Length: 135
Image 1 (cartoon, one colour):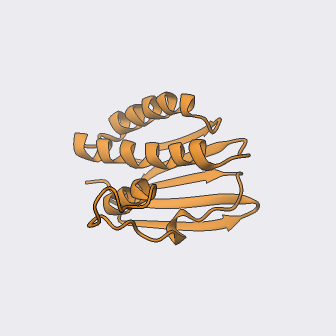
Image 2 (image 1 turned 90 degrees about the vertical axis):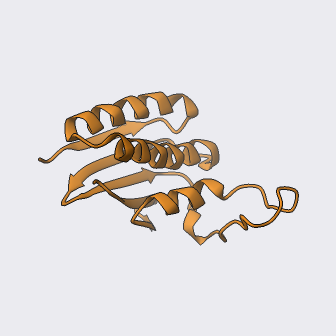
Image 3 (image 1 turned 90 degrees about the horizontal axis):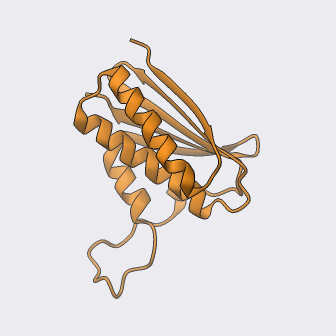
């Protein structure tokens, strides 16, 4: 089965419901388990929401998703300013809430839910590639 999704959205919070609807349809067509579908939605929503909240100047965010050999390959591309979220230090989850730096938890959780996560800047765009287990 070769289920795919290609979606171009405006980088704003109001686009997230459309993303989630399209991911739900993808998950049904690909016959993903509820757990895998939920993890996919969490990862994609976090990555797209990061562009919407922090990608000041971005005019689009593209989501490409395909299923291949027991994996889900998720690509998020935006034309905002260069920003590698993977270069940020991991948050200190052991520190008390008062001592903890603000931010960084979303990417921290995404890293825990994916097999791999890679960033590159290419052709004036930020490109995040995530690989999730499909089974």
